[in-house]
Image (cartoon, rainbow, N blue to C red; front, side, top):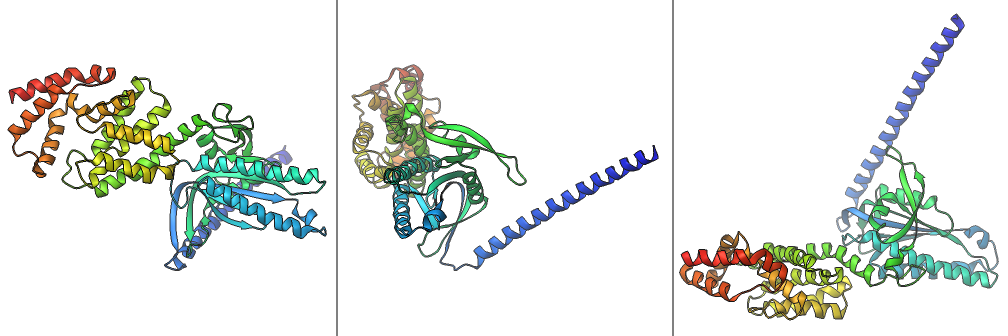
Length: 448
């Protein structure tokens, strides 16, 4: 009995000692990480002032690794294969650029690129996966060509992860990325099989709507919950032009642009906030946001397609941008802005023409012909039938008075009555929502 008690006591002591050692190891690891982070920050502070350093909260990193290199390198014709690897890197860079992805570096048998740097965007995870799928097909075609000739060639695997990084750019050279996102991407890549594209759970959540993905395994991450890793194989059938699932179709393109619209909105609304004349108390950023909201509301109720909604929302975003320069004829100026800006966001010439026809439809007096033109005209004058009509119209009076277009409130009220009496909404949705209230506005103005 005594020996048994002694044994229990020894085991208990060993458990406590093991726990203590484990805590010490964790403390040491945390200290090492903290020192590493501190050293990284010191390195950033010590670099030349000309170096551009930016922190990005959400980027997506892709690492392509080639392996089996040593077997081929020992052969007489290894120089040819090395030259071919350089050619492959050149084409990987070309594919990266096509998908708005920034090349970071090539180190020996690995190629790294990132989406969301240097220009922040919400589509970088999709951009990276599209680039990875195209790279995969490109490399597989080279492998097939060598196999048909009886020649050996490298294998490859890819890893993708979405997270935050610090990006450093020195004198226009390639960016250097700092942060755990790069390390996790490398680990996600390391457990991929030959020819596979592995993506982390973070990336998966952002792209699963667009791509076919299969669960692979868990990836242990220090101090954190294990990461789920998935294998992405192709674009979903409903969104692809071909069976291989490599080429997006029009449905994919529309869904992508609707997500991208968030980035475009940020750019345009910021421009309006900075550059619109201060006397535009009505035609300001708030009005543009109102019209954006209303075209979506009316459009959904009227049963427009996602593609038509994209055109409506883009037109709403640009419909008053010409006010930066002048009020009269601002619609035509807005159309010139779309021609300069929208091609950068992959809008086609036909799409831009349709968007411009919507913008021009808002010119007073409105004479819309198509359903989409009717929707944007109703959205533009939605305030006429809202409960906040009086305070909103007061801002328009203040704006016009400062431009010497109206002189006194009585004249303004008479102008409003005439406009309200001649105005009518074009869509069934706006008529149901606003027409009754608009009649109340007329009665209130007549009393004034």
